[in-house]
Length: 277
Image (cartoon, rainbow, N blue to C red; front, top):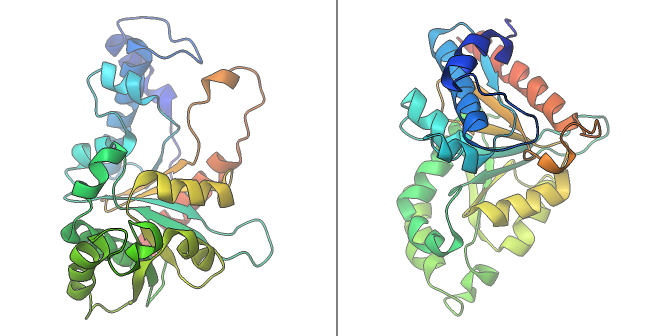
């Protein structure tokens, strides 16, 4: 398995950044160009089969956008690989000893304003993201019959329409379209109980309707051990569960645990794909 990194992009970095100095812990146009170029090069290697997996470090989304790229890894990787649909799956595989169940949360919508969530969460989206998740759990994680829970959008899963209609009008058709699927599906389950049940081992994964409801629960339970996996790509891609943390850049106090987990999971998933292929 080949291991490579940004050093091999040095010449391209100099050209794309117009020989501007790249200073650690500082955002801006030049670092955004450098980050975007690194992502492009990594995808090119992966699509060509030169590498088996891509592990990305955190990026500063405003800097990426300023440099003319999609303001986020997930969206950029989808565009560069021409993948028809991808999913943002947060994983804590329970490594480090003990009998901790794995924690997995798929974000059905990712980096959009909260005000846009109700219109974005459609029956088609929930159905397609659930199918994508089930396929990944079966092929990459080797779970023959995944147990998946759909997290509700409204408080108490709307209490039969008392607090909204999405559970009936959106989740209902999505569940009906998945009724004959070869996996176990439960929902919609209220957000205040579904993650506790899943993280205790009742479900293999949860589909969260929007970014923060899934991320808040996941990071509270698994921060520092979490890995972001982009499912649906033609190659393995993982990333740590934290951001750029400019406030501690260069101080030697950063915790590498999540990056170590991301590298380890990338190797495991890549080896699994090789065995299947």
